[in-house]
Amino acid sequence: MSEKLDLPKVDFDIDSLKLDVLFENEDYLKESKRDSLVNNTPSKIDKIYGNLFMPLSNGDFPHVYSSFVYSLDGKIGFPDLPEGPLVSSKNELDPEGGKADFWLLNVLRTYADIVIRGAKTLEAEEEGTGHIFDDDLIDIRKSKLKKRNDHPINLIVSLDGTDIPLNHKVFQVPEITVWINTSPNGVKYLKKNWEKEFTVLHDFENKQWKQKIKNAKKGDILVICTGKENNTDAIHLLKILKEIGMEQISVESPSYTWHLMKNNLVDEMFINYSSLYIGGEMTFGLNDPFTSEDHPHAKIVKLAMHNSAFLYTRQKMLY
Image (spheres, rainbow, N blue to C red):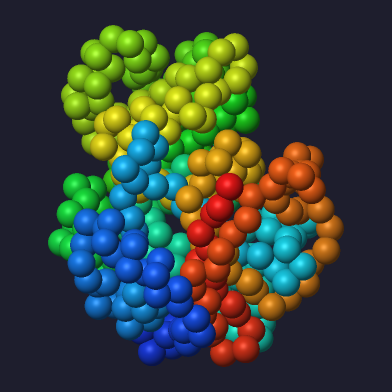
């Protein structure tokens, strides 16, 4: 039985966080509203951020979006302290802008059925539980967005399981439902090295795997096995998630976001820019760049600012 731990909360004040919207693509807003489950942006979100509608996908995959904060030179962390949130919180010119960045991350968790987090992200953020820190957003999630759980499912992705910090706090908090996606060899590793009980889903031709999900209780850990040997299969994973009704997926792992982009599977990017410089090599796609002949584009569909030291963008990915 997991020990009950109090999840930290934050008071997010509307007046101090309110963003100045500089640009919106009206056509995209109309399209996303048309394809959304809700017809109105919830009040608090509208007052701080303005219009926000999350479209549903008509294809084989969920609607997938990622959220990150960059320095002005495109770095996602400090080499000496790689925790992603520091790029926001170390912006001494605009602390409230950094808080707005963190609040927007919470908004995207609010809309998500699942938050995908990487094993390296867990290692860098020992206290990170992928929960929603704003009680107002939890109320919005349940009353307006009709989500069943207070917080999105945390799905931890790992090629072979060996890099997952198995004693991480996220596995100790009963309020957070945690799933894992790993390879067949990763399942073997977890069975050998993890004392926690978990249910493996792997025979997806046999419809009994869906029954296992339906029978899972709050706090049960499900391990979704895809791929072969030490490699997982992101395409198969997203199809599985879509098939069980997971419509909105938020990805908070930089390396996994890049992997999904390589497979044309990221629909939107919410990229914020903190007005500081870092340097170094902590950036997206360092070891796996696109080429000049084959690369995706992004159309900016929303641009906002907090004071003069923080920029917020919503980008539609085009492949």
